[in-house]
Length: 78
Image (cartoon, rainbow, N blue to C red; front, side, top):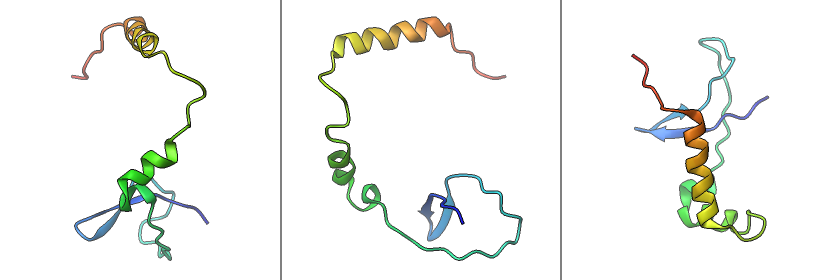
């Protein structure tokens, strides 16, 4: 038994992850709505207090830019 997240698109369930099921396999699906899909504010409430302690926003921005410079220029695949 496994759990696979899916999104409804044009009335059909579209898996968000790959599965190891063989083509044509028959499965039983149990649908559980997630809070984020039914109530966007629920996702924000559930994440409240997730960080540990105050965040120094200026340091965070500096760290992000520093890590980007360390990676070098991003190249697009040809």
